[in-house]
Length: 254
Image 1 (tube, rainbow, N blue to C red):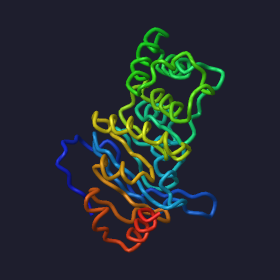
Image 2: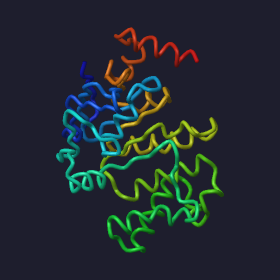
Image 3: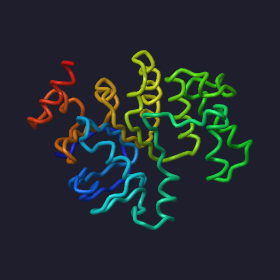
Image 4: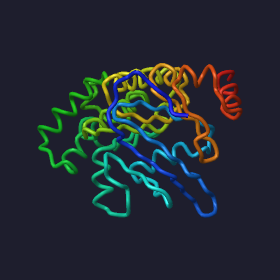
């Protein structure tokens, strides 16, 4: 079931083996195993409640897995606080909600973590922060407050904030689901740019066009398990599993 791809990619940077996660009696992840290579772009699809968001949140310990093993950039994710802190420095995450501080300007939101976590000078943090605001197309918004921006602009600020920390791996948890339709494209354009820049990306999204165009591999999850994975051309035109076929019919005919 392993997909092949001609794109040049590096060593395995994420290795998950038989990962299980419970919430009380409910098993949210039922033995998920996955390897992600450096520079690979993976899109994870699945119905609501399939475990896809829970899974990517285990990769930086926002959710704790109870069984199995997860290694990120050669570091195993255990209860050791030092390991968790080290992994979080290498893994950036963009959420559905923007989680910006309303009382801080855009630039202050972006520079907060580099100054306090990476111990950068304010000058360095602002220089790098402005570089990323320019990259996501909104440098002129630096001195505004989040409430003065559109949803799409706020999500681009959230992406710039993540990138300013210089992570090796980017996780996107349905980053466009809280946006109006006309704002989705501007966020997807930024994600396309990042995907072509060599970042390792795992994105949970329902944006099928993005998955077809950008992913090296598409993974379909349902009921806490990986049902199917393949390169986009095969995944969308010739899905093997009946559950995948039903999901795609519902989504694509919606």
